Length: 358
Ligand SMILES: Cc1cc2nc3c(=O)[nH]c(=O)nc-3n(C[C@H](O)[C@H](O)[C@H](O)COP(=O)(O)O)c2cc1C
Image 1 (tube, protein in one colour):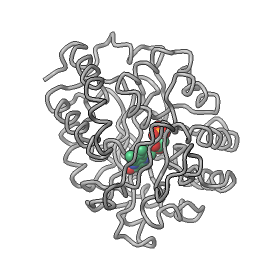
Image 2 (cartoon, helix red, strand yellow):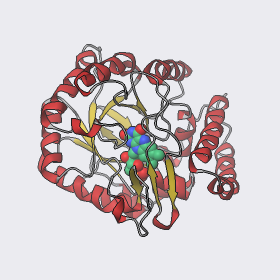
Image 3 (spheres, protein in one colour):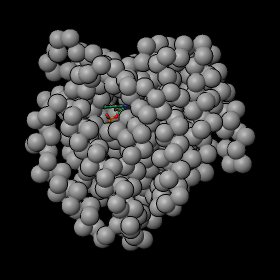
Image 4 (tube, protein in one colour):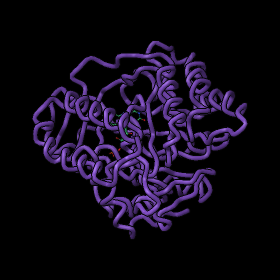
């Protein structure tokens, strides 16, 4: 069914503000599950298509990058919709692109709960989800159905990670398997080696491993009639020179760009020490480091490669700061949890921040 006029999304916004106090009283993962179930339900009923006059598709916001047309530069970051359950809703909220995953070759339950924590005093989240997802085959089924509905007006990226049971030496095979199943259904692919919650994953952030992994993904990808752009997602905890070395290795191996950054394990930045808390920190405290690393990488790689800036975006001026640091596109996750679905259109209304580079 096509979306009814903006009322369906207005209703989502209103529902959010009504639900928010209830959701914030629940355990963070339980709240996430309820919100995602509603989002998935909405996405089965409505197409999420935007009318030609929708401000999220205004000509002044368009970005062309990696051979793709982005109606606007604000994207949904990986990890919120790991199994591609609610893409129509993200599109309808105004996102200019949606990254689903991280998906692994094998379905896996992730780490034991509790594994997601809200830290409202810091406008932050800490997670140690551990790539809970239904696996690449299930994702392929969902994306096939979505493509058949022919409702997508925004690029959909697929973020690939390593299955927990796969040993580090076998990692290229694992990524290749996911890529074989999913490349053709994606608009772009992400090689994610920067999540802190899969043991050994971030050890893959070396020049040699980056080359191996990107080569593994490029194998099946380059056999497609239209190979998809591949990006590498890096952690903010790398030293600048190591991140830059990985960036160069990725670009030499044929990547179109990089995503900066994933979550940080440096929890000491929190305003109050949290005994026993471990995982990846996102939101406000991540903003400064992720933006600084973005600027360093842009300076090192020059103007050509596409850089997607993510980490701590809550306000239009945060988008402007990512732009000034060299971002072509940006992504949001934690800001959406705290500020609600209206955040996307709020960021879009502030066009000044959005005149991104391309
Ligand atoms: C609960 C949670 C789960 C996440 N899962 C993933 C994931 O599966 N893959 C990934 O590449 N990034 C994941 N991320 C990282 C985000 O994509 C993003 O890089 C990071 O949160 C910084 O953006 P933010 O400050 O706007 O949240 C996750 C973040 C959160 C908060």
